[in-house]
Length: 95
Image 1 (cartoon, rainbow, N blue to C red):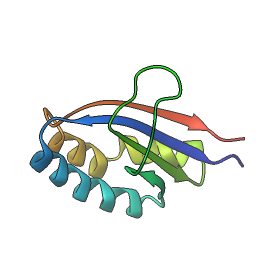
Image 2 (spheres, one colour; image 1 turned 45 degrees about the vertical axis):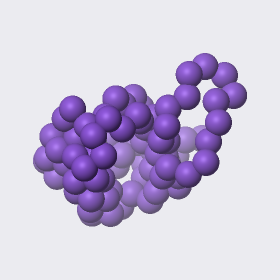
Image 3 (cartoon, rainbow, N blue to C red; image 1 turned 90 degrees about the horizontal axis):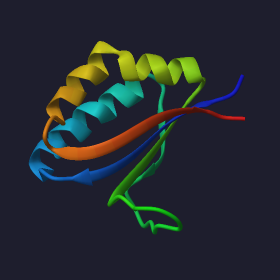
Image 4 (cartoon, rainbow, N blue to C red; image 1 turned 180 degrees about the vertical axis):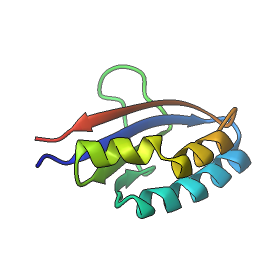
């Protein structure tokens, strides 16, 4: 079964609020079997506009990643991020 990946591109606008979100999201990721493959760190734009922070999370399947995102636990974490960042997030099925 192909893995599922949640890929986020983020510009943080309120570091304190984002830190609260990150702590709650980290617990939700772990509780849903997710594994961070990239979380911040060095990056550069090869094409298009870059964001300051990039996150790649791996889950056992597309469905598992989707359950994580829609879970009450992650949605509560997500509410903490309100107004703290500009973000693009996609769910991608692996090969």
